[in-house]
Image 1 (cartoon, helix red, strand yellow):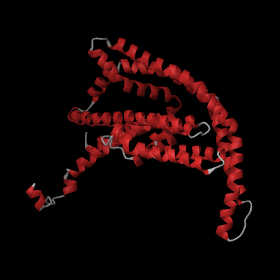
Image 2 (spheres, helix red, strand yellow; image 1 turned 180 degrees about the vertical axis):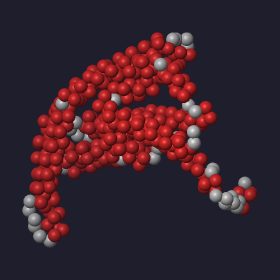
Image 3 (spheres, one colour; image 1 turned 30 degrees about the vertical axis):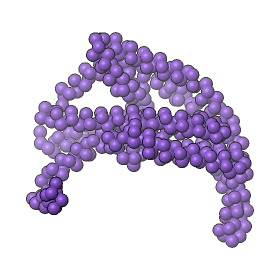
Image 4 (cartoon, one colour; image 1 turned 90 degrees about the vertical axis):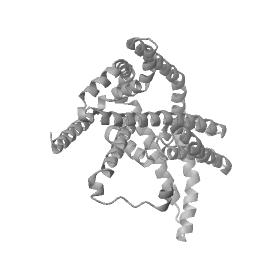
Length: 364
């Protein structure tokens, strides 16, 4: 098979895979979730196998413990989260009214100062539009959460994910060996090396970032609660959970907490406390948690992560968000590999002489 034929073969295979994923995306969620669970529980099963337990028994034990813990956590937190969401939805109109009352005169004053004349109604209109937008988002969210499709997705996730995770986890090593046997023999070791790099990158990012998100959720939740913000814990914990989206996650939480603070408090200091909590959180995350728990071995740039998450969400919805980081890790490893191949190829050097050594290099 020539180089051109191989290129055509892999291009057609990739296009067919993407097309199949796009067509089947309504039913992919439990399978993607089950695959993610199996991927992260496989090392635990391997350790139990090393201690003499059969693969089936290890899989049943690990899967049962994992989903029992998840059920306990969800059962313990779901009523509280649901109550907070309902209470927040009930208070949205009052928050909107408070923001309109406080922001309207300020915007009118700014407009009059900038234009040298009084333009009443600018602030009221802007605040009214903002309030309408908030109410529209709240109604849209309620429709999404209350739709039949959401119920069906939830049922499929609850019922199918444990089954998919169990069967994938039980046969994980068998599937890996089978796929390995399909690799082109001449390039098998190279492909294995790149897959290993993908595994290290993906595991390092996801496990480390999950720890960072959980820690930041607790930090923001406890901090906003102490500051006296309405729904402070749920807003803060939500901010931490979405902080895997660099910068945007924090900005979404800041906008939500800041809006509630402006509507709730009549003085400036409590609002500044809320802003200070987010500033302290960014210092804690950027200088301590992320370098310690994620580190530099991940090699996934923030801009690349943001692009992957947005593109995945746009094309495949929530399933695309789940697949975004793994695909970004794969593409990143492949790009670095191809770049290394190019830099070592005649196409890059093209007969050029290597650069002369400097005096410092000779001394070294």
